[in-house]
Amino acid sequence: MALASKCTFKDSVFRLRNLMMLVLLYGLAPACGDIERDNPLDPQHPESTRPQTVLIEAFVNINDSLQHNINEYALAALDNLYSIHAPDVIIVDYHRNTLDYIDPYHRLQNETLYQRYIGEFNAVSGVPDVFFNGTLARVQGASSINHSIQRIGGALQPFLNQNSPYALEIGYDRNGDQVIPRVTVARLNRPSLSEGDIIIKALLVARIDNAFLRRVVRDDASSSVQTISKGEVRNFTLPALTVSEPQYSHSLVVYLTDRNEIEVFQCAVVEVK
Image (cartoon, rainbow, N blue to C red; front, side, top):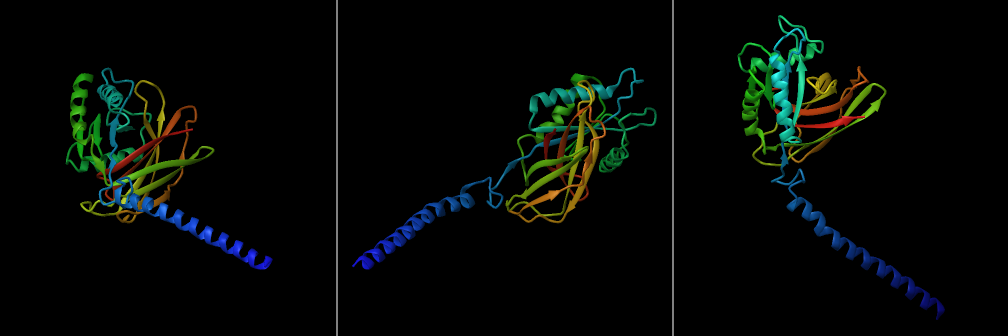
């Protein structure tokens, strides 16, 4: 009799556990289904969206021998626009030499990128020269700060409040003077978007002073990526960037561009500590 009673108790416990598991699964199943059907933040959702952060790239020369450096007008105008539109825009400055003036922060990579950009416009080189989301728009020259604000702000306006075909999250590992970018890219599952290979580019940007050297590109790295399918999420580690001026604060900027480096699809920034 005691044995029969013991078996009945174990059987009851087993049935109770099964019942609890069924209730738990029943409660979770609709929630998981809701993510795919109703959450536009899910990359696999057919109407998934991410706001696009606008990348503004300025090519400048700040040689001290220039009495009236129009580059400083453009940089001041960019500061003004950033104060209005941040965090919807990211601005980086590439310093380059000109025929007459040497810039101490010139890099060969800056010049290579610049020549690629102006090749899309079949135009002559010159500074300041400001580009929006790659080569989708361009403003060259500056006559005054206010005029530069009007021109650059006018070129920026169509790019604000737009959506991107990609979601982008960035971080990094720090090993001494090495900054190793960690990047997560999600291709959104919107049917109107075509697929293609992309390049992930990382920039190490230094804040050298609070005047005209706020966002100087000091190093860069890139990685070519074959097509990311719609709805797919992938992780990447980029080559290390080197902090050669540790006395300054730095930030890491990462952006996604097409394989010809003509159009920027998405960008993000994080402070380097």
